[in-house]
Image (tube, rainbow, N blue to C red; front, side, top):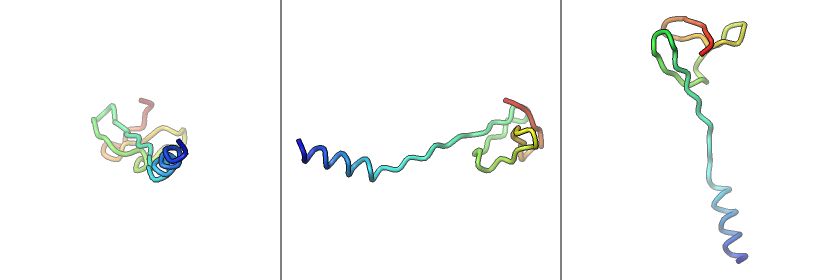
Length: 56
């Protein structure tokens, strides 16, 4: 039992996970990762293609 527990701890510690979120522009349909999207002063994302800033 201890061997299994040790193996599971090692296996879980080696796994990496990264949350990825995608922004979809409702105006022009462009998609981009949210880390590449700029936000206006109200906190709304601004589309890089058409410049539209809106809540989705």
